[in-house]
Image 1: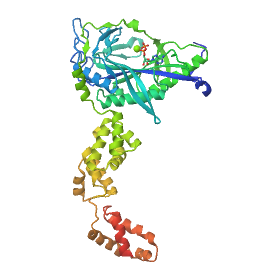
Image 2: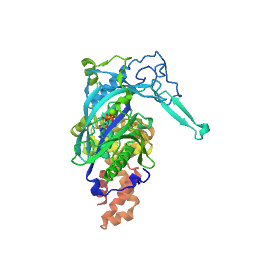
Image 3: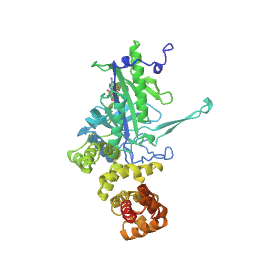
Image 4: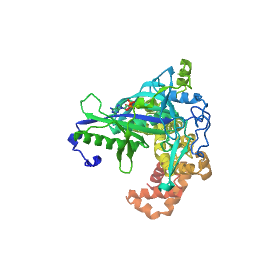
Length: 494
Ligand code: ADP
Ligand code: MG
């Protein structure tokens, strides 16, 4: 190893890189949004005092027996359906044996040869090109606890174990090795997260570790059918890092193969500071885990009735919503993408569109003024001070009772107070003045006060009209209808 240059430093000529292709498969762990753990009734809440959410089951005390959480099964089924998988009517939990201090049972309860669901797919789209990526399987399992390492000096180094997380329900989603670039992997993860958030099976909060990804990658010469030896990059905690880690690892493997070496099957870790992957351990094989059917749990049977009940509750998925938004609301592809990014945003927009009966304006207000104001305050759409119905009401008033300019002012006040548009309009007298008599009086007064400009106008300098319009708008605090003002001025000055 000593004489080998740092492989990330090797920059390969593009014509060499072009002869290779990457093959990527992902394993994604997702925490299910249940109130309680998968095999006991301890809460799953985050941030509790260490070892406070534990009981004999997650402490693995002798004689304690697991009881499967029905809600966890339902969420796992919903996730599987959203990923277009076939559900097994009969699946089975299995013991995956390994030792780790934060795993007091000495095994994880997972699924092995009879997983919950298989043969699914998810479609991604990059630069308008769609590609369907295979989902190999979805299975249920319990999470381990957490080891916390503390202290630096040898005499002052401690490791602690917090078992609050032990027994949290997870699904593991395994993809086929169908991705050919880090961009495709990134798109799959983005689509997966979006889909799981839509069906609300998980919050997918990556900062809390609710979604964790292992990326498997190998390289081969283009045209080659056989898969190369893969390396697995463990537990990368952001999608951007997954992409960086894959890019580094692909370059490393190509350089290795080019220099006559062989990729070894191993588990690697990504270091975000150096943007490199480093070897962690040789990859364990399935037989290392000595899987066998979990004797403390009966096989999981999902009846047709239960499955169809869950199926009937499934919400609209992102792809279907995008199609419908284009057809029903006449939105552009771009607007549709933005407005369906999350289910909360999509539902907010639909309410604004329906209440205002002006879908295009609704889209502009939600993506423009509202998104900007929320961003400035660092708030998600779910915490918008303006309820969707109220924004819809405001947008509906534009062009009728109020001008677009006035609407912006009313919007700002609504955003600050959460009030309804009409409340703001009434209190602040922000109604548009288009009444000819009211405007006429104001226009007369402005003309009388600016006789010099009147002469200029009559002398042929018609650009002075803009000056008069400005004066009227100022006098009415922007409430005058600009078209009506223009008309009036022309008549009176002419
Ligand atoms: P293992 O038994 O080593 O865990 P699996 O067959 O279960 O391997 O696959 C784990 C993940 O690795 C899957 O997402 C799969 O698509 C992916 N994978 C398998 N073989 C390769 C390969 N040669 N190159 C890239 N990814 C692969
Ligand atoms: Mg595997």
